[in-house]
Structures are given as C-alpha cells and as structure tokens.
Length: 304
Ligand code: AMP
Image (cartoon, rainbow, N blue to C red; front, top):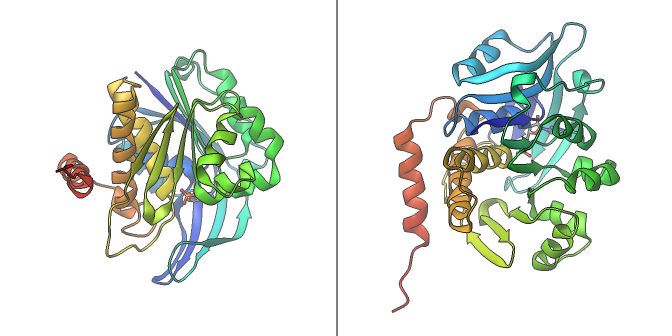
C-alpha cells in the first residue's frame, strides 16, 4: 500500500479569540500528510513552496517520514499565504487573504516512483491541479478529495470535472449546501453523489460527521473538548487520519470505513488543541488509540 497526497503547503496567519499566530506552518497537504503519517509511512507529498518556507519545517516533514521528492521549491516566489479569522464561537471563519504565490504558476509533476500509488488524497487546492495530479497516477484503488468554498464559488465547473474521478468526497456542511443548492443534508448528499463520488463525508464541526456509504448512513460524534484553540486544519487532519487508516488496513468495507471516520475525528481532535500543527507534531500511538477508544465509549449504548 502507498499513499500520495497533493494540496497546499502554507504559511498561515491565524486569528482566534485566544490569540494570533503569524506565518505559522499550515496548508491542506501539510495537515493531511502529517496526520496520515501516524498510520502509514512514507507519505508521498506533491506540492510547492517558496524561498521563505522555513528549512526547519522541511526537516520536520522529513522526520515524519514524508517523502518530499514531489515537492517543488521556487527560489523566486513566496509560499502560499492564507490569513483566517475565526468568530467568537470558532464555528465560522473569514478568509481575510488568500495569496496563491508559488501556487499561481504551479505545474505539479508526480515523480515516477509515486505514479503507482494505490491511495490518493487530493487535498484542498485548485481543482485543475487536483486533476493534473490524478491523471499522472496509474491506477489508484481509492481517491479521496477535499475542497472548500473558495473553489466551490470560484471554479465550480473545474471542481465538478474532477469529482467524476473521486471515490470519497469530504466536505463540511455549509460547503455541501452550497454545492448542491439543498438546505437538507440528506438531499444534499444525494445531489453530490450524482456528481461522481460514491461515498460522501459531511463534517459538522463540533457536531461530528456523517458518512454516506451507498445506502448506509453512519453518524460519528465529535470529541467533546473543553479547550479548542485553533480549528485550522481540522478538516485536513480528519482526511489524513481517514485515508491513512484505510491505506494501512487496505480494507474498504463499510465497517472499516466507519473506523476510518473515527480515526479521522480522533486526529482532528488533537489538531484543534493548539495553534498550527503544534499538537500533532509528536503524538504517540497510545494517545491516538486511547482517544479512539474514548469515542467508542462516548457513543455506545444498549437497547434494553
Ligand atoms: P481546513 O481548516 O481543514 O479547512 O484547512 C485550513 C488550511 O487550508 C490552512 O492551513 C490554509 O493554509 C489552507 N487553505 C486555505 N485556503 C486555501 C485555498 N484556497 N487553497 C488551498 N489551501 C487553502
């Protein structure tokens, strides 16, 4: 089994009610690959950074056994920069600035050894780039994709085009409504499935996630955390834990996909406990398993 990830590598400026972090490590591909590295190694990364991307963060990614052969470093451009500001209850956020920088002229090249990757995660990025990467991979067993309102609003046709090749789409509830023009999430799921993905995961922030698997529906809770400092990357970390578990076990059954949703939720719950990727830098297998078991305990009940 082998996992390839494409998406953004970023320097983020984040404002939450708890403080501000400037030009800190972020990006969809960064969160996804670090999250997935707790399940499968190496993770193959395709992306681009500029001259200002700190060397210590490249070293950190290497320490996590993330293979950077597909990472381009542009000496004459800056790294993608995103500035997000969260509301008081952390449930909504505004994108203050999105500076594509090195991503504006990025032409992704999948290195030869990566072309036979069996699991592919298309992280949130321009859908045209997602498709370019996908077309270079020979015969993936499973393609998982994520996106955001920036692309749903700005490049819907390109997004719909890439969705034809996607097996599992992971989006949040407001994105599902925006993409389907349906307020009801069950109806929204049906519309989105008609675009291509056979399986759909709709994330509902602090209210957990819904897994639509053919005709089945699984409802996963979110971990009840008392201290959430920075929700940035929760969705990407979810995607990384989800596909990481599937790639490690190579089992695409409904039962295993439910476990993958809980592993995704587990990793996401760590991601939000501090700014940037800080809490995810050094997780132990014990911590992950322990929180996974806690999810089970929290949602178990007997019928009599
Ligand atoms: P999430 O909170 O899971 O939606 O992901 C947040 C990450 O997405 C941040 O670290 C940003 O750097 C990155 N991001 C924000 N906007 C975009 C965009 N338009 N394209 C690609 N990545 C983005």
